[in-house]
Structures are given as C-alpha cells and as structure tokens.
Image 1: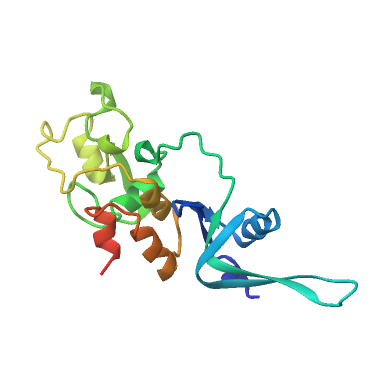
Image 2 (image 1 turned 60 degrees about the vertical axis):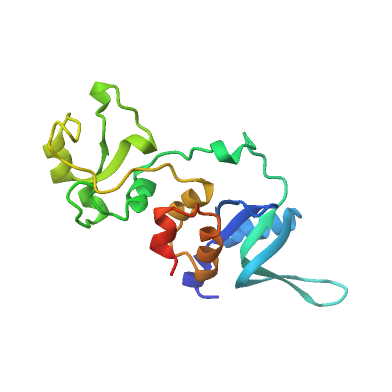
Length: 198
C-alpha cells in the first residue's frame, strides 16, 4: 500500500454517532482487535492484511472504512451540550478560515496571530468567545486596546465550536463522506456548515 494513502485518517465516533476525533490506520486496527468497534460507516479506506492461519493457510484481512463507531469511550462528562474544546491557534485560525477578522484579508498561518478582543490586561479571558484571528499588522495596531478604542470592527462574531465542529477543525485532508457526516452534526447556523455544504 502506498504510504500517502496510509496517511488518511479514520473518523472515530461513539456508539451514538457523536464525532470524537481522528485515528490513524494503526489505531483503527487496534480498536478492531480490542473489539471496540461497534459498526462502521462511510467508504472503504483500507484493507489491512495480517498473518496466516497455521491450519487453513488463509491470510487474515481487515476492512476499514472511513468512519468507525466505538464502544468504551470514557468521557469526563457526558454533557456534550456543555463541551468546550481546548483553544489552540490551529483550530482558531481554521475556525476563522485564515482570515483576519479586522481587515478581512486571507493570510498564511505564519502571518496570523491570536487577538484577545477584550485584552487580557483589561480582564479579558483566553476563551473562544474572546479571541479572533488577526494578521500581525492588525494585532500590533490594536495592541492593548478594545476594538472600539482602536476604531476597528470585527467582521464576524467569534463562536465556541461544538464537538463535531472541533473535530473538523482538527482534521486534515478530510474525505467527502467524513465531511458530510461531520456537517450533519454542525448547528444549523454554523458558519462552518455554510462554508462546507452546498
């Protein structure tokens, strides 16, 4: 199998179909081996060949689809409505589509920064609702001021991604069936839904 194809990740969900994250083919094989896979969805992604049976001479093989639902996922809290994903720049910049929320221009990741809308020096928190993707020029100009004090206006309202949106934000090279599945878990008014559907 070509190494590039082995880099495609499998979308892992719980038994109810709630997206949990991404696993590589090795982790997927491990989940199958531990009988933690309840069912699979999506398109065929891998056929993994194992060893040979000494009696039958038959080689074992495992078919892995692009989405697997798993048992035994221990969550700290079952209240997914109150799930707040960890904040990191990778997910933040992807949430805002690599666009500076002040000047509206698209930038490469290396030219972006995390801006605290209400500055930390004024009591602002490092939370999803108080951060925006900003180009370094706009962030430097705004400095330790609020947007109003700097006479700058946000072009979009920051939001807290739900669990499925966060899984999307963490993904790379998401396959179309995986994207369709994730979008079905996005809120109806999610900016990510409108960006990725239709």
